[in-house]
Amino acid sequence: MSDPSAETKMQFLFALRSRGVTDAQVLDAMEQIDRGPFVRGLFSARAYEDMPLPIACGQTISQPSVVGLMTQALQISPRDTVLEVGTGSGYQAAILSKLARRVYTVDRHARLVREARQIFDQLHLSNITSLVGDGSHGLPEQAPFDRIIVTAAAEDPPGPLLAQLKTGGIMVVPVGQSDTVQTLIRVQKTDSGLEYDELRPVRFVPLLEGIGKDT
Image (tube, rainbow, N blue to C red; front, side):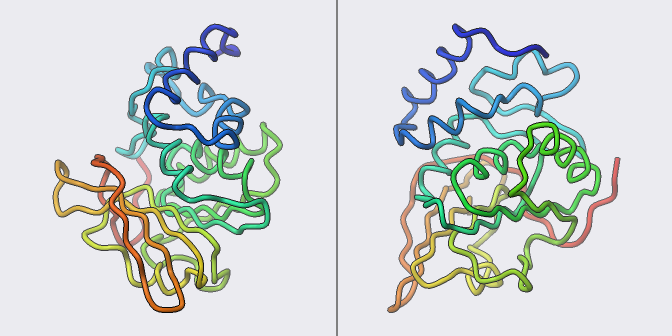
């Protein structure tokens, strides 16, 4: 799809603001990263609508306002190293790359990682490392992380990921035991323990263990 018109981009950003994405740096990153290349096939014409859309391997690209709200909740600083569990289309990682020093993103589907890498290369996003793996275990060899974002729902914030979060770090993760009732949680690790904040209801695909089979 060709570059969005100025009017389309303005409407896109207005929709983000109206749904609570107010952080200027997050909005600037979402203005820089065009969602169009991350939406392929039949749904490419709907890339600038605030809605989740299907992608390969039975996954989805999250609606932009949820991407913005999750990114905003992370409170990323330019020196941070961020782990994303669930690369999916690569859209979230691309936005994170505009805010953080380094982004590691892991997905259990090799096809999704391969396609996301192609887009990262096209956009010259050189601070993203994308890997195939079981994201529920994190990336111990690169830990600890300043920020962790999980784009699939777990029953509880995963222990291995909490262990890889620096003291003072923040993790944002959807939590819920069903596909219909999930809550976006922000966890902050402090010297005295973990602090939890409930942010909003959401709906994500489940966080699964193991490596997926390409489809």
